[in-house]
Image 1 (cartoon, rainbow, N blue to C red):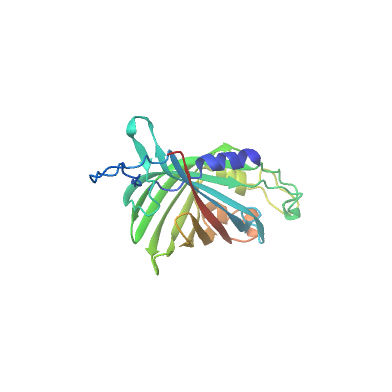
Image 2 (image 1 turned 90 degrees about the vertical axis):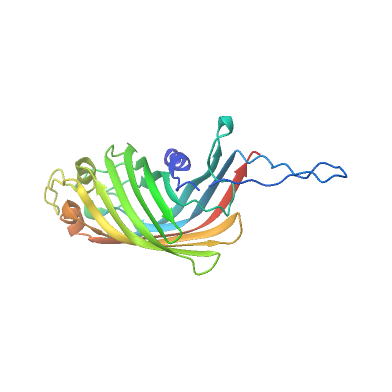
Length: 269
C-alpha cells in the first residue's frame, strides 16, 4: 500500500494550468523605480485528501469505504528559465495540455468476498500513464492511456468529456460521460474465470469497451490555497465484462463517490 501511495503522489496529476508571478518591494530611493518581479516558486502542487466509496471488486453488489488521495502538479520551474504550468492560483489555461493519469485497484480475495470462492486472488494493481486534455471555460475533454506497472500488467484507456458550469466565482460543477477500455489481459484478469467453480462457469473475457458511465463533480474554492472537491460516478459494464459470470452473480452497474479537502502548496522562490 505504501508503494502504491508513493506512485500516486508522483503520477496522479491533473491537466497543467498557465504562468505569472508576484512583486518585490522597490529600492529605497526618492525617484520612483519599477518594482522587480519576485522569483516564481520552484514547484506548486495540490493535494486532495478525503474519503471515498466504491465496489469492493468489479461486479460487486456492495460499496466499500476507504481513504481517497490525489496529487496534481500546477507549476514546475525548469532549468534555463523554462517552466510548466502556472504559479498563479487564479490563472486560466485553455486549449490542449498533457496530463498524467493514475489508478489504484485494491486486491480481490475470496477470503474477503465468499461469493468468489474458487477464484484465484488478484493482487493490488497500480496503473500509470499519460493523456491529453482539452479545456475551455464551459467544456473539457480528455483521453488517457495507462499501463499496469504493478499488478495486472495490462493496457487500459479512458475517454471522457464534461460540460462545465460556474454558478458562483467559488463553485464549479462538471458533468459528462466516460468510456473505459481494457485489453484482453485486463478483461481476463478481472472478469474471466480460468476454471469452473461451484457457482461460476469457466469464462474467457476479451478486451474492448468494458464500461461506460456518467460523472458529476463539484469543486468549491475557499481561498487561494484551500478548497473542497467531490464527485459521484455511475458506470454500466459493457461487452465481455457485462457477460462475465462474476458480474452476472453480482451487479452490472456500479456507483462510486468521493469527497475531500484540497490544499495548494508552493515550494522554493
